[in-house]
Amino acid sequence: PTAASILEVRSVSEDIFLIGSGGIRNGIDVAKALRLGADFAGTALPVIRAVYEKGSEGVERLLRKMISELKIVIHLVGARNIAELKKAPIVITGYLREWMEQRGLSLR
Image (cartoon, rainbow, N blue to C red):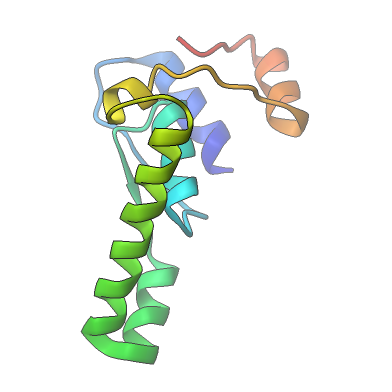
């Protein structure tokens, strides 16, 4: 899974440029990837669907919506920007938490 991959790679190095992709469908997913340690988030399927259904206007609409969702998440966690989002408190539960515990990983 993308979240586990981001955590695993980031545990090895803070210095590499990390793009989180796979399962990124909206601005909330972008925020999650960034908070877990990605420098950027990439998405493909939603863009392909938008191109197929509405062309370039569909892609523009999709990206505006994703940016809006990301801004909302930033605001809701009390951050003013992405740098602050990346330091916001986070609660990890379920499979990902179990995996982190088994691997001895923690968020920095």
